[in-house]
Image (cartoon, rainbow, N blue to C red; front, side):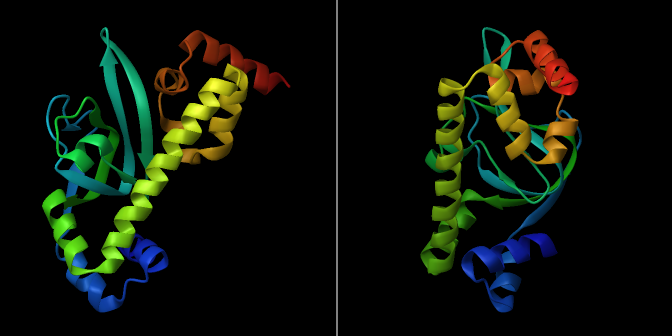
Length: 191
């Protein structure tokens, strides 16, 4: 939990007394690998800060998993469109490996927004980062080759994600076939 305090102290200038009040509102949860925290068609009622572990969001298209986001230690995750709109999710939020998270319910966050400009700032920062991530990913996928896209991925994503997310999930995230990713990885290791 110290990691989260440090992040909030840096991002929004949270004081120790504000932290004590805020941390009392968090629920610490442990999830086993393959646990779905948000199911397709259900509303995402929580945002999560990952203490340890690895999670992903994905949706199904004609029975095929399309990965949309990965997050690991010291990162936030939710099915953001569902969380923000409080409407049914088109995505599934799932633990890739056993994970421990801090859960913050939507209603608690909106109450914090009303009580403190600092938490409004946190909400804005999280929304901006999420938007920039989606924009960057869209731009990269539309303008780069599969190899360039993979090189960008390994340069810009956390090493834990690169090393521990199954390759077929990374291929899906990059919008390429697993065989193509395997070929690209082989080319990169040779050069």
